[in-house]
Amino acid sequence: MTTPPTHVVFDLGGVLIDWNPRHLYRDLIPDEVERERFLEEVVGQPWNRKQDAGRSIAEANAELIARFPQHRALIEAFYGQFDRMMKGAIEGTVAILHELGDTGVPLYALSNWAAETFPIAQRRFDFFDRFDGMLISGREMMRKPETAIFELLCTRFDLEPGATVFIDDHEDNITAAHALGFHTVHFREPDQLRNALVGWGLLPPG
Image 1 (cartoon, rainbow, N blue to C red):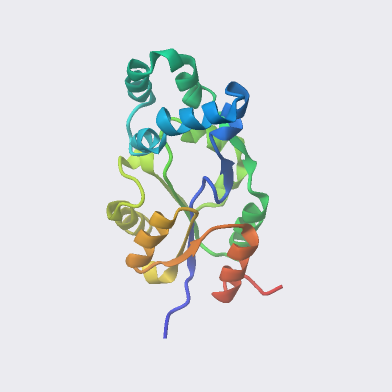
Image 2: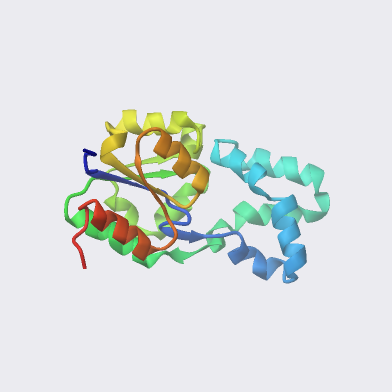
């Protein structure tokens, strides 16, 4: 019989925070085709992931500006106006976070986030004080879905995967966590998450 989970780990962007570069670049690049090309070919995921894994913003900007000098201002805006990429909290998930915390469920965060921009989110959102611990990829020089960051999460906070729910909006991270024995929720929207947590007995039905 599977042991029900007792601890919950949240991703941040896409789960608790509505983060999307388009929130900023819709204003900076009005043409949709041009905007999507820039987001894919210039400041795409391969570039952004390196900052999530600890590379400095100065080094990241220098690399891209050398390759795309015509886009210097738009490249510098990615981190220079980072706050505008965060539209706000995903309130339904934040409500769940508070409900879990109010019932005494230990709560943790595991996020791919650049070390230099994470304080911007901490200053803006007051729900961070609900976490018993946070692991931020840019501070640890490793990122999801690497096995090492999940192992560090468990070691640092004394977590057992089989007693822990991991919530994330990216399938590759969910796959990695599931392979290590975590209970997982591939997040799509708050009601779906709530139903899963009710099923594990972490929230009351209704």
